Amino acid sequence: MTPPSDSGKEALPGELLPAKLPSPNTKRWTARRKAEVLIAVSDGRLPREEACRRYQLSEEELLAWEAAFKTYGNPGLFAYALHSSQLRHRLAATPDHIEADEGGTQQR
Image 1 (tube, rainbow, N blue to C red):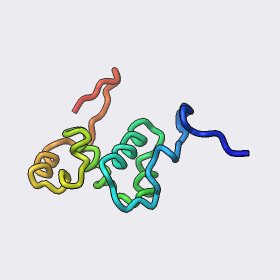
Image 2 (image 1 turned 180 degrees about the vertical axis):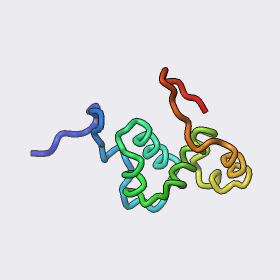
Image 3 (image 1 turned 60 degrees about the horizontal axis):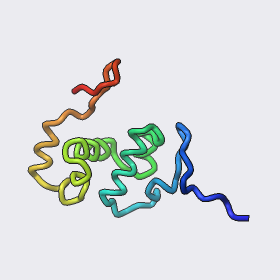
Image 4 (image 1 turned 90 degrees about the vertical axis):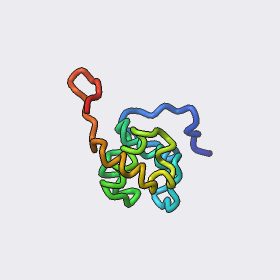
């Protein structure tokens, strides 16, 4: 008997769907793979510390991905964009964290 397919299956809160995440052995980070990790971290399926451990990322690297995505969207996650001196300069001027206030809106 074959196991049921994950297609169409809704994730429960806190449930990790490995098929939706890059392999822990990923060596080549495409913008899409970075976005998959960032989405899993932001929606709570993958704790930040676990993402860093699983993918051998530093906290600073994960923060750089988040800042690039917040500032430029998906194009900010391309490797060439992260190496651009102009982009690095702009990212250095952005706050590391955006916190939600009690009403759930984001503020800097």
